[in-house]
Structures are given as C-alpha cells and as structure tokens.
Length: 252
Ligand SMILES: NC(=O)c1ccc[n+]([C@@H]2O[C@H](COP(=O)([O-])OP(=O)(O)OC[C@H]3O[C@@H](n4cnc5c(N)ncnc54)[C@H](O)[C@@H]3O)[C@@H](O)[C@H]2O)c1
Image (cartoon, rainbow, N blue to C red; front, side, top):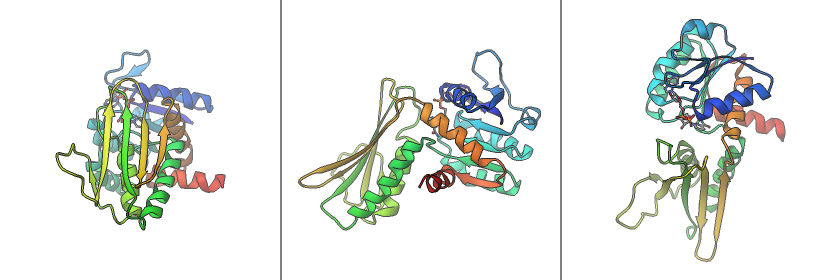
C-alpha cells in the first residue's frame, strides 16, 4: 500500500517503521511543525489522490479539516488522533454522507483490546457480587495532553456497559467519599511511560488487578497499519473494534 502519514510526531514515526516492516511505502508525511527532512506542512487533495490509505496520529484541533479532505478525496483513513469525542458524530455523518471510508480508535494496540474484553467480562461477573468494587487508573508520560486517557475512558465504558451497579464515570479529585454508582477513573502523568492501564476489582478479602503495559509505541503503530490493511475496499465509518473483532474471530 502507498500510505500517507498525517502527523509526524512520536506516533507518526512509529507508524512509518511498522508500515515499512510490513512492506508498505510512505508516499508523503504531513506535519505543520515537524522539521524532519521530507515532511510537508500542508495536506492537499493532490497528495491524497495518489495514496491507498492515510494514517493520522496528529492533534485534535485539525480533525475536521483533515476529515473533510479524506472524505472529499475518498481515501481510506485510519484516525489514531485522540481528544475529539465531541466532534465524533459530525465527522461520522460527514464520512457517511460522502460515501467515504474512515476508522477511528483511541487505542490500536491488540494487547489493550484483550484488556477491554477481559474488563467487560470481569465487570459482568462482579455485577452480582456487591462486595466487589471496580476502579481504573493509568500512567502516561509527562508530554501527554489529555487526562484520563482515551483508553481509560474506553475501559470505563466497558465497565458501565457490563455492570449495572456503576452508572457514572467520575474523573475528578474527590473531597468526599465515592458513591457506590460512581466509577473512579484517574490518570497520573510523569516520566516517559508509553501507557499503563489497570482495572482493579477489590473485595473485603482480596484484589484482582488486570494491567496492560505498553513497552513502546510499536504496538499502537502495528495495530494502526493492520487496521489500514483491513480497511481497504470497505465503505463507511468504522471503530477500531470492528477490525479487532474480525481479527479475534480469525485467530480463534
Ligand atoms: N489511538 C492510539 O492507539 C494512540 C496511541 C498513542 C497516541 N495516540 C494519540 O495520537 C496523537 C499523536 O500522539 P503523538 O504521541 O505522536 O504526539 P506528538 O505530539 O509527538 O505528535 C503529534 C504531531 O501532530 C502534528 N500535528 C498537529 N496538528 C496537525 C495537523 N492538523 N496535521 C498534521 N499534523 C499535525 C504536530 O505538529 C506533532 O508533530 C495524540 O492525539 C495521542 O493521544 C493515539
């Protein structure tokens, strides 16, 4: 595949390595701020016309402009950029209306999706065990701009979908006791950690902890490239879970 990278920061560079390793070529890298050789500042329809897919790991401020260009040119786009939940519906409508192709996800690591599945299962199992409470925490590097992470919020949604005792995601620092229906979700920032997420299930006598630890950005990058391969030939607005569910079905 001929791939265009939109955003050439830490993730863009990891995606470039993963794509080359899987035999793809990078036909353009677009980033308004990157100083690296061969990077262009602006995304144009002409650039997109010659590509089989776009993989975007940029910042959410540019999401509408970029999504409009993807939809207009019909190039399939994998969007790894996080922090645009409030604009998801509008962009989904735009892609569908234009008969375009896009797939978005807050986490492209296959290992993290194993944690999502296990979190759904443990939440379901503990629904009828009122002594067992659930909480979520995550660690990320000091450069990360959003908190809690998109992945932590996805984990929280898995809990709420599968355990009716939890109905509210609570991300604030509390100056009171937590309510039984609240699910506390907190992010801790510092150092260089690429991302560690833990779902803790705690009862009066014991604790169960499910942890996903990213050792580098390579797992996210590989998942994004695999998602782009999966997306070719499809039409519509997809979530990364659509690709992952197919992958897990194939592996089972
Ligand atoms: N979905 C996932 O699996 C996953 C994993 C890791 C990071 N992320 C997300 O990916 C994004 C990038 O992460 P990063 O660690 O590479 O950040 P980064 O800060 O290293 O790089 C982001 C780059 O995007 C560029 N950029 C900003 N606006 C742009 C635009 N309109 N067009 C093109 N480039 C633009 C910036 O100049 C910067 O170089 C963030 O939103 C992050 O939360 C997602």
